Amino acid sequence: MPSQRQTPVNSIVVPYEPGTASARLGRSGVVERWGAVDRTAHAPHIVAVPGDGEEWTGAALVTARPDTAYLKIVDAVGDVPAVVEAVVAHARERGLVQLKWEGWTVTPEEAAAAGFTALDPPLSQSEGAAGPAAGYVRWLDGDAVTAPPYYGQTTHFTCGAVTALVAQVHAGVLPREALDRRAELTLWRDATNFMACEPVGLGVALRRSRPSSEVTVHLDTDRPVMLDHLAPGDQEWRALLQSASRTEAERIGVQVDPGHLPLSAVRDAIGRQEHVLLLLSLAAMQGFEVPHWVLCHGVVPGAVVIDDPWANAATGDTWVDAHLLPVPDASLDAMSTMEPGGFRGAVTVCSTPRTLCPRSEPRTPDPESR
Image (tube, rainbow, N blue to C red; front, side, top):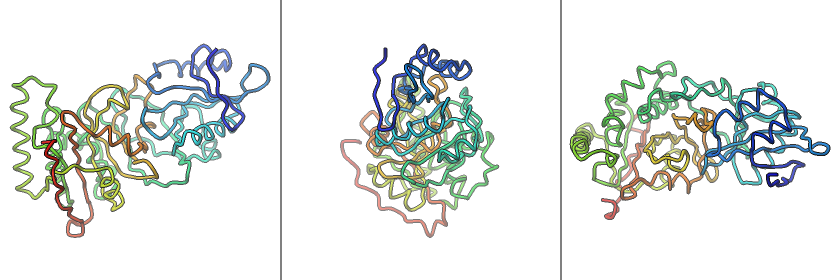
């Protein structure tokens, strides 16, 4: 029998085991979805409201990406209001800031009655990740974060281009209808270091596509980056392209700040209504060491709110996880400390008229990172 733990509300939290869920719920459609993928990387567990004897009067399957500050309800069944109340108490007990709810079975009316707000449907979903048509969010402490549109990258390598485009739509300088696959691939083609986008090349491409925006690249190493997985010959010509991007940045006025960008500066930039494209590793959230671009666009106490253009369908991850995703400051700091050398790569974008954008003084580079 799995270990059980009581929450302050009359409920039980138990690790998810397919056999236990089937026996106690008997809802074939829901339970089959729960077991259709291996969710173990997202710590799946059941929050249940006990009934008489061994029966449950209701239950929810709850998951979350590691090192984040939210929980996601995949489904809630039975006495749904009581179950959601139990999940809220469980999330508060863990010090989390947000709940999500995938819209497989819940209606908009049920979600609203439980204090959730509907998320706008995604403009696209990342390759292979067919999530629900609807999703809902509830901020547990009343925090309000303005949501950008969610757009899932349509290839495995266009995350940088997508985050740049979503930032522009969120800032109101690019119409929502312009965010499509043609725009995604066009910006990627201008920014790519084949296949990924490195920070300076991304900043240069963004400035060329939006000359009115103030773009600053933050990169605290002068070595070529994101190349260690390649053979020496393939590293050499990509390094030449990165050098050419630095030359182009100087020519068109894109500042390359060689100092380390602290998380406090990320928060400050968001507070000025700027957007931060941040390079991080997916090792903590997804279990594999791959460099990846996300958009930092909101802050709440203790966490930075990001939009991630990629969802990992193999773990039950969907756009509902990736959209309006709160990540604790310490976790985001660790995720965005990149190897080799612990460098950080980011692009900050101020989309108000450039004459009104603050231009930061370059930080002193850390000699050990160079």
